[in-house]
Length: 409
Image (cartoon, rainbow, N blue to C red; front, top):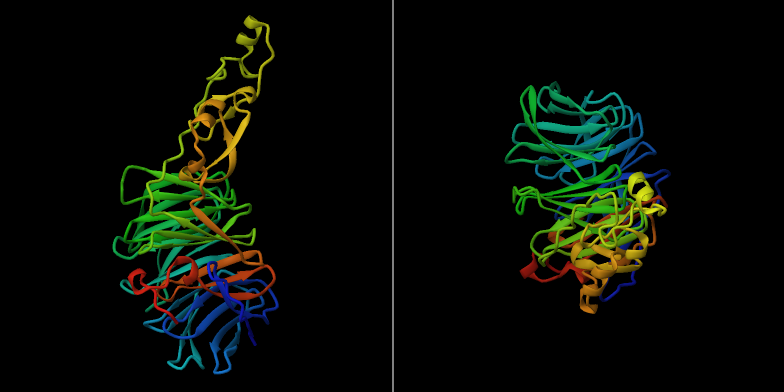
């Protein structure tokens, strides 16, 4: 049974409902489009369908126990297909009834040798595409249940996005790399690899209209990869204190919603011309005062000075010593919502208005493990380490007019 929440904030996300009752970590959740319903998959081996009753509370209309902990979920509303990934590497397919009170088992896919991390259903070729801890991406035929193709990586494949039109798959892995693949029947082609994160990739979001790929990482940062621009342009966003666990880009309002294990919901304004962070320059001596860094033995010997530690200015990218970078500043237009190191000369160029935040931060009051949105209704569902599922009304934060694609519920 879900607890009904009545408190609303006029500006931040409004918490509509808490759904308790799960005995373990809820790994994935999905809204049922055009219905007041949510499907959850949990490590307690349960798949549950929650429907909102006349009382305003959510009750489980379906409660199904599987053979192994559930690690991933994908629901396709047009076909009523539900795909559940498990810790043992299997993917189980169900079909749910029109009234969402009954579902039937269809088949089990032997997709992986260990934990399934993400599932996508592509109705065109009738493929179920998945990634797993066995370091593979697989795509299997939903008609025959047989393997169509697979590709291996050097690290765990942690997350997946897919473009229906081009059959391009984006796979994030535990090493911090994102691989772009062209999937075909029986084979695939590696198009490119994207490297920029200093930690494992924890989530991806693909916007097929703008052709933007967003990646969240254990390094607490988000990177926007402008795939459609074909110029390799990347923007780094830093506004979380822990790993980023969920991303959703609202193309109509040019906003990015991100959630993190730090319990924060962040809404980024992407409708501005942001500056790309510079590449860090390397030097054997400070590029401001020319003092040698500690590995520059020759210059230290010649000048009879002690080498200094190397730092980098986040605004210009120059290699500087601590004496030439005594200042800290936010610089939101470059994605730095926290204070970061800048050289003293760059600090003097940053005006007060340059420090105005380009994001809003909201406390979710649970450490978020998973997030997804129903953009058409402005709804978001999160699951946390507290084993709660929370449903949010995001329209006070991201807009609630027909012009933005949202309508009042």
